[in-house]
Length: 215
Ligand SMILES: CSCCC(=O)C(=O)COP(=O)(O)O
Ligand SMILES: [Zn+2]
Image 1: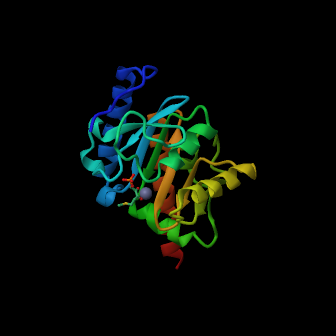
Image 2: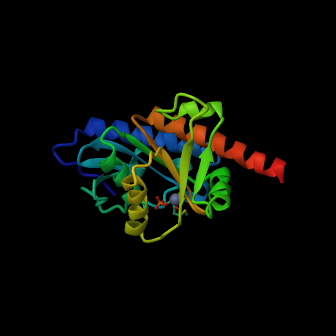
Image 3: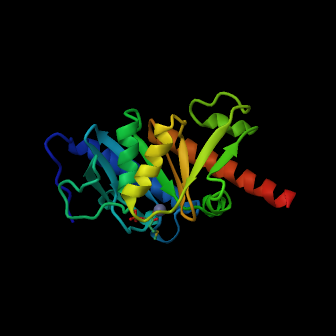
């Protein structure tokens, strides 16, 4: 399956983004956060396009050939490949935050268990953890970092609408969980997105430990 690029997308840029996505995916798979082909990853190419993982690929064995181009409505561009089932959640981030350059979605055990545990509350309140400062804009452990938990709606437009409703309420959003599913987070570059993902994995793990110890 070959990727034809529009004239507006430099091949070197697409290749660099595809390599960055594949390399991040392989590393996150090694950590055990992408079991059984789960998870998806993308990077912005320009205002109208993103590079994203082809659906169903083993994220531990990803190469640049497993990455394809989509437009900001999530439609395949220049290929017959099928983009990630959750592409609409990625393009929503790029449309909402012009500075966002990378979106990461994983299914770690910690993320999955936390999503179930906090589904009824609809939100995880993080406060008092030094590592909250790894999230851009959070300068003190004393601030509250709210991670919403959205229902695992299979109909993507409805899930996109839930995220939009949170944003329309004027609430800050650095990441969200989906119940029984996993986490989405993003950043101004791949390094920032990775930092957010690793910090949230750690913070959710700490909250789960506290729940166990207090039980
Ligand atoms: C086997 S995991 C179910 C789909 C999913 O949640 C996921 O993250 C991977 O979907 P994709 O279409 O991006 O491979
Ligand atoms: Zn998923």
